Image 1: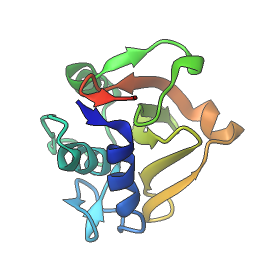
Image 2 (image 1 turned 120 degrees about the horizontal axis):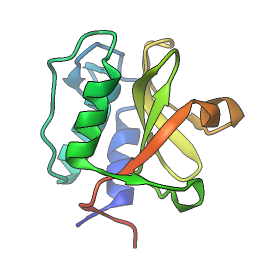
Image 3 (image 1 turned 120 degrees about the vertical axis):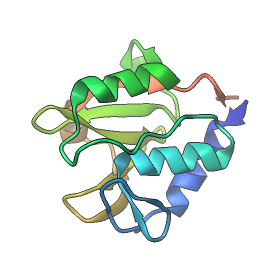
Length: 138
């Protein structure tokens, strides 16, 4: 098991990395999937990364990938640090890492990896929450 804090600290270390569709190089370019793939893999959490997706993600494909690696968290009160948030803008198409108080994600609209608090606007974007079984929360 990998400590949740280890995944979060790795993701934090990627802040300010430029947004790049299908990017998988911290410090050079990441997208929302690449941020999570790099942080989880670098922490030692096994995942199979996918890069064969269009710029406008297909929600059904994202859901399939989430189901392959993670388990759905049923209630807001049970969210834990290092859970993956599946979010929507027009439709479900974005992933972020929950830290317990904030969210870390590669945000195309600002062009880089950012961390900010989970305010009401961002909470309203959450479609579902997912947890990797290889992450410990002790």
